[in-house]
Amino acid sequence: MADPARAAKLAQRIKVVVAEALGRRVKDPRVESITVTDARVTNDLQHATIYYTVFGDDVAQADAARALEKAKGVLRQEVGRNITVRLTPTLEFVADQIPVNASNLEELLREAKRRDAEVAALAASAKHAGEADPYKGDSPEDLDEDDFDEEDTDLSGDNELDEDANR
Image: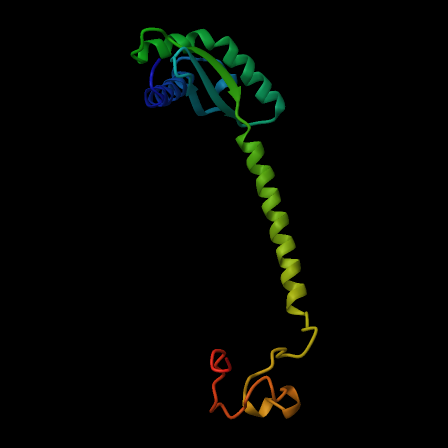
């Protein structure tokens, strides 16, 4: 079993080889709009999954999938010529869902930005529920004699309370 680093290197090499072979070796016009986005190889180096995107509608995507299945043998042969492993891995082509997920994510971000703008507009026109400064200050003019009981605090500050002195 190969280590994951070797499998990752091989996957990148297979990605490049397949992308170049699609442009040079495969003469099918249906593969012109294909972009190879990623490749993954199992740790035993026997199976390679190649992710691709297609520029176009659903019909173009279906045509591209059929063209890749038809050209799978030629692409595997090209991969076998350009990599140095004992056995050439089998190729599996999977349509990449990244563009679809990205457009969904962009739509969610636009919705969040719109909601943030609404909240900011509401916050700009909002008023405080109470006074402008709801916290009372500790300055002497704010203190009334009714605020303290005589047993709580001595306002002169000369005598400090000592809990142990009363025992």
